[in-house]
Amino acid sequence: MSEIKKTKLRLAEWFGSQDKNGFMYRSWMKNQGIPDHEFQGKPIIGICNTWSELTPCNAHFRKLAEHVKRGIFEAGGFPVEFPVFSNGESNLRPTAMLTRNLASMDVEESIRGNPMDAVVLLVGCDKTTPALLMGAASVDLPTIVVSGGPMLNGKLNGKNIGSGTAVWQLHEQMKGGQISMHDFLSAEAGHSRSAGTCNTMGTASTMACIAEALGTSLPHNAAIPAVDARRYVLAHMSGIRIVEMVHEDLRLSKILTRENFENAIRVNAAIGGSTNAVIHLKAIAGRIGVPLELEDWTRIGRGTPTIVDLLPSGRYLMEEFYYAGGLPGAIRRMGEGGLLPHKDALTVNGKTLWENCIDAPIYDDEVIRKLDTPLIADGGICILRGNLAPRGAVLKPSAASPHLMKHRGRAVVFEDFAHYKERILDPDLDVDANSILLMKNCGPKGYPGMAEVGNMGLPPKLLAQGVTDMVRISDARMSGTAYGTVVLHVAPEAMAGGPLGIVRDGDYIELDCHAGSLHLDIGDAEMTERLALRAKLQEAAKGAGMKGGYQALYIDHVLQADEGCDFDFLVGCRGSAVPKHSH
Ligand code: FES
Ligand code: MG
Image (cartoon, rainbow, N blue to C red; front, side, top):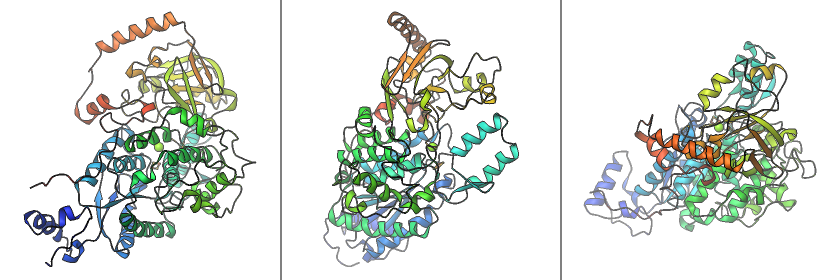
């Protein structure tokens, strides 16, 4: 081997010495057929891959990684691909959210402990985007996001159907007797037609848009369909760009500033994005040290028109969004209307968000609507507070029924998800269309993992009467593909002593989205008495059913929804200093 060149690159700490350590680091890598010159001062770029056949949305990622590698080689870098825990939304039980933080730990430790100067994050299915951004933010190397892209439009009987949203709709219709089992199963076959993530504006599409709005990806990363050749061109170009970012020392902390988060909150409103974004954005901000509060969603997001007309709030799917001009088109429209808070926010290509979008073509005003003909005039996420949710709750107005957004009703209470599933089928259940369905113990600690069960299906007897929406309240989340007048993320959750846990059948609850309030209509004395009684019961039941393992760690350390559901010990950036030698 020739003389080792002196380099400032991080990889030199592994491969830059002609001694025992240098021998060990290089020699074992050479078993992959890597020649000497690849260790000579080229930036090593990690490709953090969430490929898994159990995460169908990310199952095409080995091919995606190949195209990233081409770009890295072309730009004079050396790619090293590594696997991390893959959160597949459709298969993982009890919920992929339970392991978002686990994946983020895997990502953080893999990046810091290995020879790499920068990292490309291959993300797709809902939780993989926040998990990888959280982990990478805690290390703070130059980082670029490459998303897997959405699936092609789903089809049923010649019409488009949207991922997830169709499942909720058709299941209700089947239970209400409006469609046959045959149609239901036909939908299953035509629903997921290609590689890629859910094609509605669910959480995967929302987080892909947010990654782009935050400036962590190249323009158009969010919407190019997974199977479109341009997705692979974007992967290639991201590979070239990440090598340049090493030379520019363009670290994630230079991109993820408060301004970029404010842009992302506004973009989430314009696209009709998922409520899950509230939790994930807070968790990412926490890792990079940017303060973000629930009220920022009101201050920055509310009042923003939703102009991207996608399911579940609107009509179209991600394929049409891309053909209409994609996120750069939507951002252009926002900026022209004075709705982009920080035009000069920096992005990974070294340009500002506005420079990237100012000339973006818009091909279809039905999909990316004009500001004066929005899908919803007052989009965004509604933050609620009150004696039922002292630390907040959320509701997505664009997915709700306008007539229910100010509503007073009697609670029908379910102690947990199992109780709901059993009780909702009871033909004698004392419930009508004005009742409020309230479910406890589905929050971060309670489920555990805060599953997407908040959009409780309506009682079959009311579905048969033609009722299509009711107010629902819980400490759970709901899928970004779901809809309804659904109050979510109630904090503190019931299991953590929140007032949600003391609600009884027949109690009156007042929801007022315009005032941002959620009120349990019992007197203060009654409230205090019930809270004391419940605290005693919870103390007595402490530890019951606890099986140890990761779930025990999770329950002990998970923060509440208003804090992003990160682990208390993971908040913050711990940097990229090279750890001590292993031998
Ligand atoms: Fe993976 Fe929806 S299930 S993106
Ligand atoms: Mg989901």
